[in-house]
Length: 517
Ligand code: FAD
Ligand code: DLZ
Ligand code: SF4
Image 1 (cartoon, protein in one colour):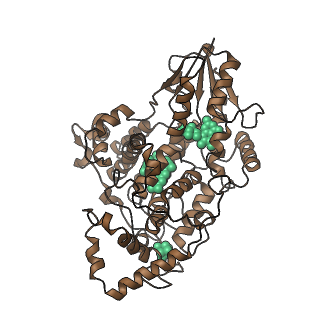
Image 2 (cartoon, helix red, strand yellow; image 1 turned 45 degrees about the vertical axis):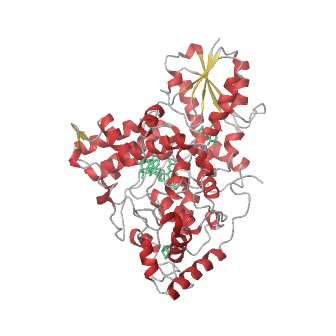
């Protein structure tokens, strides 16, 4: 009797702990394309295509390596549509003696699997996911008893533990963090080397056709599909990044340029989150570029901090704060998500460009997500839950474990500050400094009030004033109220009236974009 090893769509790693010690002769590897996962939100078409294509490629590779792989297709008439339904069917089909699998990345799935495990007809083990650099028990013990959980201190501990960018007990170069060198405003043109594009092969083309057929009304386009769908392609993308873009990664990290979607970013998040790349391996390779003198410290440290610091910290915070994080709404924001998050139809040039990139690529880079898309929602008082659904739908790298802490805690401060020390709220001035968006915008970033003022300007103050009782005690932001109090009565009234004008003009998104009606 074989052991059944279910592998979820974001667990496409041949060295998974559930396969350790197993042999092809006594193991059935189970991959499940299921309606529950393709529709629990109405994912971007390219996100579904990426995951299903990567699963099919992984199944083929595992078969080629000798494993017995049972791959249940989405259109298989007997498909029950859920992970647990498919595991149950596979137990019977293969007369399995036991089930063992790696824990899922999100609570929703964990709860379903635990419920199944409790009533499972055969013994079932759920193993820790060892593809993260920091295990969950290690994260919990780091967080226990700390008053404030800040990425920076977690990151330092991780640097020390892994020895990454360490010279003995000291950080390489004498500083832990070189972010101060990484906030260069943009030059007119940044000639970043192109990111490798992977044209759809026959498997991907078939999946794309299926997605167009089954999910025609989901957000986004498949016309530009170019993501790596195998570990070999992901490795090519990683190698190209290390050689070509890593040296400039830090300096231009916060820059946004109209129509230039990739800049010096790695575009590796989709492959990392699927399990096609190993985060620790990437960190070590980035360090090797620095040690060999091919990439400067500020770039390499910045990249390693994203992976070793932010990615691991975010994952720990997800499990620490669930299930409450999903309902968190510290500011009590309830405004519906505006329609332009889906349509891109807005005169705000920054917003339109970020939504366009999102629609075309199922991707936008960090500062676009944080300081345009997230910032607008924060200062306009959009419901965090509606925004979370949007972020989960639209990005090819979005799984709840990484999306939710980034949106709820980092971008919307909906947790009241367990993750960030202050809200990332900004007026148009920040966007103007870090991008080339404003020059050709219909709005004037220098106008503070009136119909032509950049909407971010009055909304910023409206947000601050609306939430004064919550924000004034904050050491990092409270002093801003002195500026407000110094403004003339009429300027303050104009500001709030302008904000009201912007908010009243927002058109709520039509129902049905994120969830089927
Ligand atoms: P790079 O800029 O090249 O960074 C390198 C790697 O660092 C990324 O591939 C990613 O794995 C990691 N990383 C960097 N920042 C973060 C972070 N804050 N959290 C976790 N990992 C990080 N990332 C996701 O993977 N999935 C999401 O659903 C997601 N949602 C986000 C929502 C908001 C509101 C914000 C502000 C950020 C979100 N991020 C998310 C983090 C980040 O924006 C993306 O990881 C990044 O843009 C991916 O592009 P890249 O691979 O080119 O990243
Ligand atoms: C996101 C996603 C989608 C769209 N489809 C599938 C699928 O059909 N089969 C599968 O195994 N996984 C899919 N996934 C990824 C899962 O949602 C993910 O494994 C869980 O959310 C746990 O993180
Ligand atoms: Fe965006 Fe305002 Fe600049 Fe227009 S002026 S691009 S709305 S920040």
